[in-house]
Image 1 (cartoon, rainbow, N blue to C red):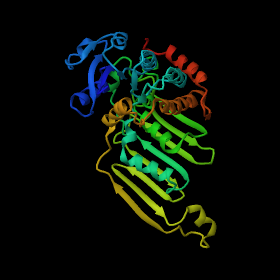
Image 2: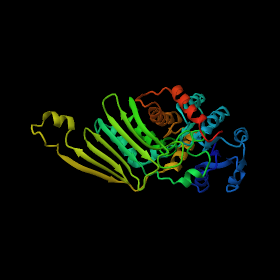
Image 3: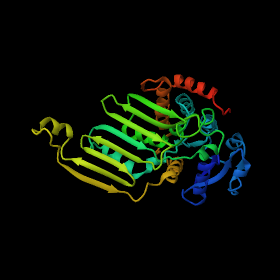
Length: 367
């Protein structure tokens, strides 16, 4: 192959964005070969691509080498499985599935090592988070002691939720801010810090909007080594905040705006605490600040990487298997609220699926 013939299934907001990026030449060696949506009127904006209203017809058409699935969440698992079984390379929009048990079923369908299977975690291309990951993995930051992420700049109006009958329902979407807006941050949390041992969360359902699912969440993470973390998110606050604060052995690091600010201690905090003779004096510190020109290649870079993996064998930035972690975090937060309990990881996927099914049975949206 000299280029990847890509079909996009689901021509809503994100599907259209990916199609336009391809047509504008933002990804090399990627051809928009087909578009698919049950609403034929959404296909007319892309006349150079073969139109389909039935995903099965696209998957079996022979016109594509790969597909990008950008449909409502509950369709991700069956469409992903069908595409993998058809022998195609697959890129999934986030989340790869609604719940852990479904995600495991989807990942189990990926049996061919020559099939590229990726997830659209575009925030992994952001240079701020890449730099933080380097500082953690290299040991420069030292052991992480506390993590606080306030991500509340997801403001949505009631009109947004009213724009589709499936939106913000258990039956149509399977969750709210944790499944729709925050998977990127939950993925980055795992990518940067790994998985905690336990999660305790308070999810508020329809606090700020007339919806079934969560639109406000505060969660507490605890790691086996004692590290603690707090994750706060909502679609109901304005103005919102996106601030990640990491306290570690070598000081405090804050990611906010386009800035990464590291207040670096001259020696590890625990060493200073154990050996310094004064009771109130903190270790000497220096300020190491960096401002980045942008947020990286984002969606276009992830799709380019997908094509490079197909054509050249390049390593994936976001393998689909790693899409399981953000789902498990979101499910655990919801399950903690459902059961009013602290949830141990790994999450019991079957137990969560049963709890979710109870919610779906009561939902105003039926599939």
